[in-house]
Length: 240
Image (spheres, rainbow, N blue to C red):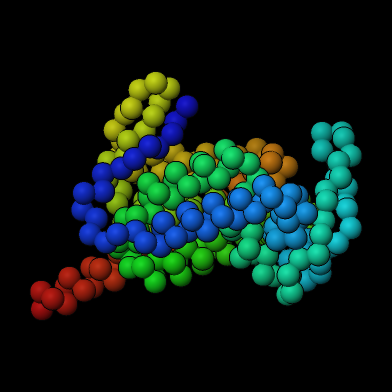
């Protein structure tokens, strides 16, 4: 058991309004999912095959998984179908899925919003989520399994955090003990887990779209590097 439960955010200056807004939107969409059922998810989930070929699958498809032929419900989606790359970022598959994602967003998102500013953070979050979805499509272009969750966008937040706050203290629950670790260990370990998961279950056959996590994380790393370079340039300009 290795679960981040908090971090040192004493240097944060701004109220994380966008983080709270994103948590509220995700929670509302989860409420709608509970009310409307799997047809709602099937309509707005990102399905790699649909993105690859620009087509909307509306009838049930079947996949072979561990020797079993399983039905995958489908439903009409938005037009154009590429919008599901955005809508899927606000859908979740279970209580554990949404609670875990929102915990990570609340812990790590506030300081990235503080660094980027509200509007730029929202743009960054959406770009990371889109990058994550595209990465998953490239990993499994013919898959008809629905991809949902904020994980890819939040992976972007983690990547940026790793670059911008590598030695910040993170409080981690390990079994029954709370341990303080630098962020580069916690997030580096998380990144390695995603790579290992993808290598062990390429595509999404293990039930987790690891490539989406990796894609979002890479976007976050890149944005973190750019933000750090811009910050260094501004400091040097002030010194001049």
